[in-house]
Length: 428
Image 1 (tube, rainbow, N blue to C red):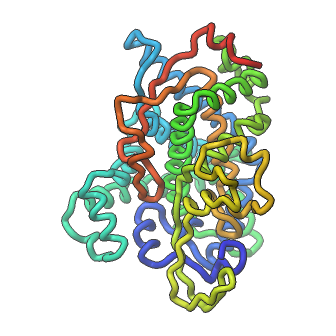
Image 2: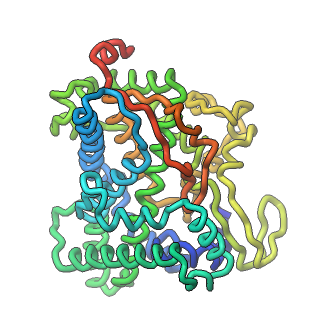
Image 3: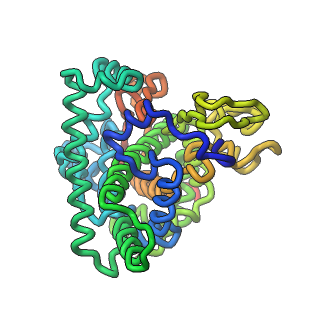
């Protein structure tokens, strides 16, 4: 279904209509030939070379997050503070996709009240009323017209997001420089070449919908993945220490406050060089996939695993379940174990890792998200130690799904600045 005949299994209308209000009909929700055209047009912006050129933005914003935590601790005259990290990470990844994706500084890290951040905060509210109406809207679309607070919030959020997306595309069409490296600039320039050659190109509305898709899906999924990773490291201090030791072995300058922001050194830093960190990030995304399930509906008769699937059949792809199958992941599939990636079972297949899906409908921004995730973890672990906040419930007990699998009350951690003796004690 993901690899073979993926276009025989589009998203059902009820699922699509729920998401399209906030995410637009971009590459995530497009189907068939429109999806093929959009993916082809977007591919240059997500090439390995393009992402490498954007990595300095990842480092800069990750370091800014670290500095803002340090600033707050200095104000409070403490070196340890309980921090709800998911909200901070959402603002960080929103700023990253704003600048790296569109060449626009959304500045929500230093100004959390900015309208675009408030729009997403309203959309992902987890109060009982919002959960009820979101659930109803998925099955009874007419409920979105009821005079409920959630519906007013979604409408307000949609207007803010569409307005920002329109502004971004207009600016890019009016003024795009040859040296611009952000994703939308590359796509606009490629689009202009296609138009000049008489080839089919993306319309203004389609371009705007890509911005909506990248803004929404592109920041919240990564923030949630990083937040769960930090949580898991806070509950497995021995793994956290191993990651920190690997970071120090390769990039010791990050542990020195006088050199950690050195632009020249950062420009040479490659997050992909850290093997154990790569294992940790993949294992976190396996253990708690930010998108635990997706739904499809067959439009023609097909076969799955030898079973006949009639047209009109609703099919659920549960990454959560696939990621816990012993045949793919070993007898300890229910354990958080980054080392498993060095000795996977003989029956393992790369297609069993469903965090980003697979095949033609797999996440086009996978490499972008993986690189961003590693940069954030590197910057945070080279400056802070994370412990679980035992004064609140374990967030793993209160997972709630709306587009992404978030903890109901966020993720609170006890965050401590690394002392000099701790830095010196890191094994290298």
